[in-house]
Structure formats: C-alpha cells, structure tokens
Image (cartoon, rainbow, N blue to C red; front, side, top):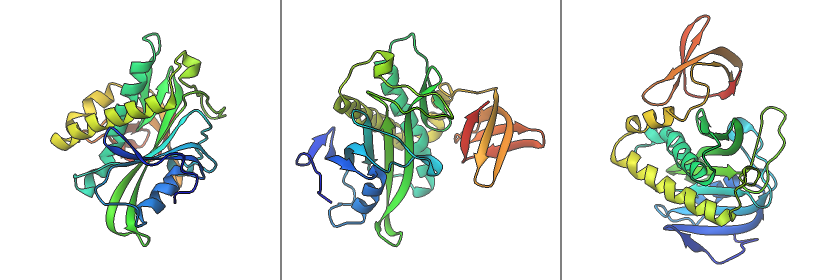
Length: 258
C-alpha cells in the first residue's frame, strides 16, 4: 500500500494526505485502502496521485489524467444516513464549481453538467466518481464514501465525444497542490451545510449552475437511450425530462446535451 509513496503522510485542512508518484487508479486504491488495516473508520483521508494508468470515470468511462493534473480520491467523514449519500453528487459539484469559478476570470462561464461534471464555456474541465466502499472485502461492515476527482490543471485529453479544457488553457497558472487544498476547503464547507440542513437547501443554488435547462438532451442508460427536454430538477436533484411518451424522472445515466 505504501509503494510509490512520495512523502510521509501529511495534513491538508484536517485530511490525512497520502501522495503517490503513480498508481493504476486512485479509486481502486481507495477501495483497497478502506479494506485494509491502515484505514481508521472516521478518519478523513485524501489519496493523491501524480499519474494514474487505469483511471475510472462514471458509468465505466475512462478518466484520462496525466502529470500536472488533479487526480485524487477523498474519503470524508459522513454522518448522514447512507440512503442520503447520493446527495454528495450535488455537494461536490458545488465545491468544485466554486473553486473553478474563483480561479478563472469573469469572461468565462462555469457550469455544471448534471449531475457533477464541471464545464467552462461548455468544455469539460473536471469530473467526479462516487463509490460506496466497505471496510471488508465482501461488501459488508462499515460503508465509506469514496469521492474520486479529476481536474485538468496543466493539460487536457482530446475526447471525440465532447470539448475539454484545462486551467492552463484558460490562462490560470497554479500548482496542483493549491487546487487540491481549495477543493478540500470548499468540500468541507458544503458538507457542513448539507449536514446542518438538507440537500433541499442546496439544490436551488446547484440548479442555477446547471447547463442545458430547457434544452434538448439525451440520457444514456445501461440498456436504453431516452430523448427529451430537460425541463427541471426535483427537490432532490433528479432530472425531470419531457419526452414524447410523457414526463420521466431520472436519477442516473449519462447526460448528453443535444
């Protein structure tokens, strides 16, 4: 587990940080980490990698991230019931969009593509992978939320399906470590807000950052693709889609702007 560890563990805003030169996947490392004797339940940790060779994104997509970009998995302390953990998707979108908005100048438009991809001028700059992992390998005992985050800082991959960008391409020159610290700081802010109140108090602010509202979209599901108009979101952040066959409420899938 400590192979390739660059520095002794250190703290970032109260999170125990483990910094690796390279790993296959920070998400896979977080899963094995939680299932090992090294993890202490309730401890807030962040796993940082300079590079990863087999990064994973949402819905089985590949996350391409090279040297000079944010490649992390955060293991926060969550006191909400596990039935509410899906709301963290909205919480983390608020945190990362805050960070990007504070870094780029006001000539750029920062938005959220449902549920938590971060776009600048319509080009993807950051993505999130949320997974519930467990302290025993057979998916039992104590659940832990793993938040995988990739942010294009110094470079961005060329992806055929959509536009991409990086902070550097937008004229922002900043060390990766500073961006990580800012993300953790804002995540703590929004986690505290969620713990103190409810997701219903955050959804209106998140909705104001959503791109594509009122427009045509398609939602790619495991065995189907649904076309319609992105009419609204529910108080819990689910998509309300107007289709030819009626109104549908969708809480999972790959959201594609038409």
